[in-house]
Amino acid sequence: MAEVPKEERLPTNEMIKVIDYVTISKTDNWWTAVVLAGEGSRKHVMLYMWNKKGDRWSRRQKFTIGRKSDWPKYREAIEKLLEKAD
Image (cartoon, rainbow, N blue to C red; front, top):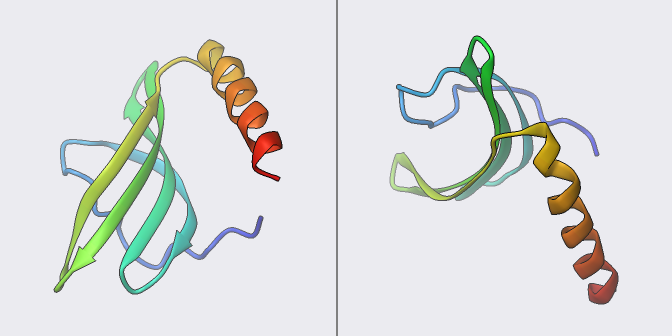
């Protein structure tokens, strides 16, 4: 998967301290990105989806992975369902 260039600031709430992000896809109306945010030892990885209406991006979905130890459970479940989707 090729990373889309970071051409603009993410439309996250200003209270969220974005450390880094990877855009998964972006069109004129939809933007999906994986975001690393937080401060100090409290960091989270979040999957965001925004929808653009007029000149504003509005959050439609957000999923947070708070602990690295949780990832294997999510990955296993996702991979199991992806196998059935083929």
